[in-house]
Length: 145
Ligand code: RB5
Image (tube, rainbow, N blue to C red):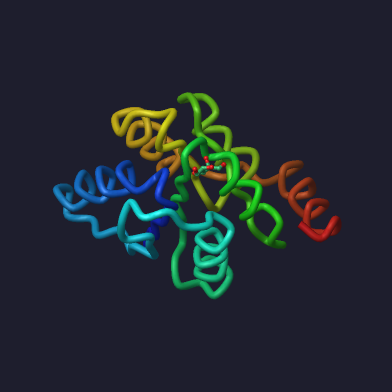
């Protein structure tokens, strides 16, 4: 499974921690930036990730900004993108089982690396249930998002 990660400056430190953790597990996360704590704009970072997902350069994405809010709003404006802020274990599982989210979102200033890694693991290992949820996801696409 290919996994890409990206953040603005508010999520940079958490991005680096997550990369380090996965590298130790032998998993390289494809880093789409940003590459320093210098201020940058989260919509432009979200666009890099949504392009990578839609062009099938990655299977899953991780997006991080200060709170997770701005970058998820930006990503969810793109048709075919389902970005979910994972804030507890049940939500992490349901974001995949019910919403088939393709991007996991975290807040670099609101969540610890331990929380983010735990919730991403649950999300990554969960399976989309399909059925009625497939129809609802189709309805999202009909709305243009
Ligand atoms: C940047 O200061 C901050 O506004 C951004 O990371 C994010 O939290 C926006 O939602």
